[in-house]
Length: 99
Image 1 (cartoon, one colour):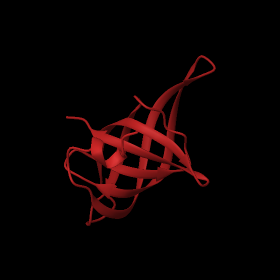
Image 2 (cartoon, rainbow, N blue to C red; image 1 turned 60 degrees about the vertical axis):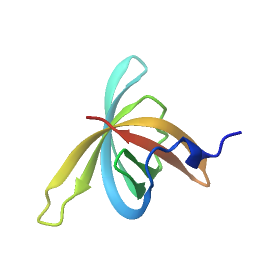
Image 3 (cartoon, rainbow, N blue to C red; image 1 turned 90 degrees about the vertical axis):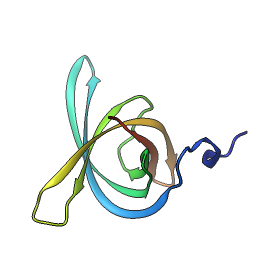
Image 4 (tube, rainbow, N blue to C red; image 1 turned 180 degrees about the vertical axis):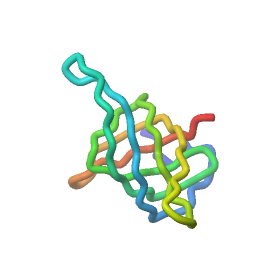
């Protein structure tokens, strides 16, 4: 079995940053827009790790909103969920930044 860090192309930097995110999903034949909160736990040039109460699924496209230092402006960044796993009451997900 491969260790998760062996799959990474870039070194991750620890992060402790609250972020909001949104995604669209089909539920019971209806398109739903989901808006949730998460905690960024690590960051690299290619992606980030995040903890959330929402069960993200591999392949989903998620728009992350990073707070900027000035005012209430948030920077939107598109990501793809590469993996997600349940971990002690929440989910940990690996997200890849999309160009």
